[in-house]
Amino acid sequence: MGFPYPAGGGSCSVPVQVQMTSLGGYCVQMTNGTGSNSIKGTVVRQYASEDDKFAVCETSNQAKWFGVVAESGVANGDPCWVVIFGIAEVLLRDTTAAYAGRFAVASSATDGRIESNSSADADESINLGVCVNSVTAGTDKLCKVLLTPAK
Image (tube, rainbow, N blue to C red; front, side, top):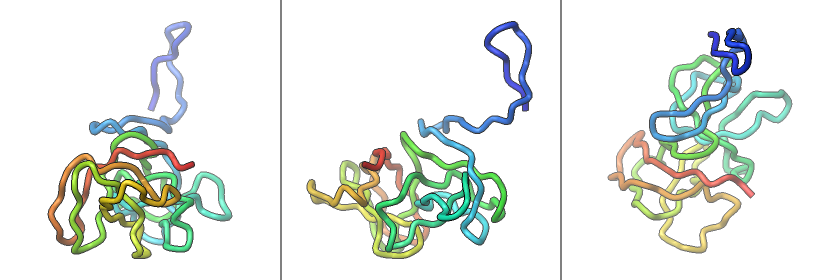
């Protein structure tokens, strides 16, 4: 995929590795290192031993999250878009609801999902941002979250 080169009017054949979603999320392209096909909305962290690769954010390393998977069905080992800033659709822990204006915090589940927390003093090490819409409880529900960069 080429894009217009800013000086000289030519084009450049560099692969695009950054883009913006229609919701207003900034994405980067990284390698899926989850061990299975990607699932949109999963909270992810840097893969421990390889550059430019992500893994599912488990309970033991929630504070290391850096983004949310933007697309489903990408095979393990293939390039996949990850939202790192702005608004992302994030998977809720099953059977929990989300409420607009509340914190989105890493879930106690080990599958990279979130919960909606009403406390204004949510633990910042696992606070992903703020829910911008309300979602009823169910299975595999997505909530829009304004991501806050990790500290």
